[in-house]
Length: 100
Length: 217
Image (cartoon, rainbow over all chains, first blue to last red; front, side, top):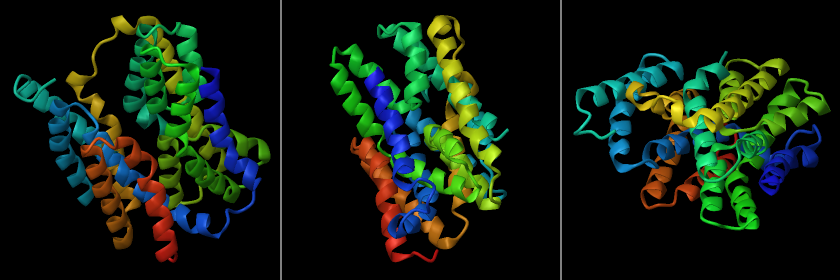
């Protein structure tokens, strides 16, 4: 357990030990502005698909209204609420057919 | 306040982790210490699963190293935000130690609107850490007594938040295409069972490639 903790701390502190408050070097500095959007894209895929098969179908259906809210306003509250409400309604409406 | 909006996603996972760790043979204190030190849901669940199968501590440590290696880049990005906000050496250490996917996403979303104050940058990971460790403690001690979150759809909190974050970050056409391309590649990898590759390699490879060929964006 302490080995796992130590490794996690070391990975997080390594950039500070390297940079010590300086700006990151060229290739890293050019990559960092792209990191949020590509990380968000990758996590949207993983969080919707790396679940049990019955849950996956529900998540993909919930993602449609959640994603459509972005056409109205860019916010992370609204997709969360819209997706959760959609999921709750799907489970309430057809708990046997659509899984847990 | 932004960090508290993640509570519906963080707290149920923390509760579940606390309960799962105790069920796997960890003491409640060990489960809480693991959450406090590792502070990374995916790596912690994997560790507990591995330990439950009788794997060695070295194997568990290697697994945590592999899964958490992505925090190197996220920590570097967080530290760059901290540098721009005038972080002191001590606050830079706190920022680095508090780096998780969700804290970085919130900090980056804030930075898209305006340069966040240092206190705000620090408050996000601190709030998430308190929620995560607190939920682990409750799950470890009261796991079997807690109600299920699925009937309320709250298990969709984290996927839903990342849908919203993708929308926030994809504010230009090139960024939208980059986000969707990362989504597509990660989806394909996940569907063939390479989830770890999708999480570990897709974001840095895309970021470095785009930084190389589209540096002005």
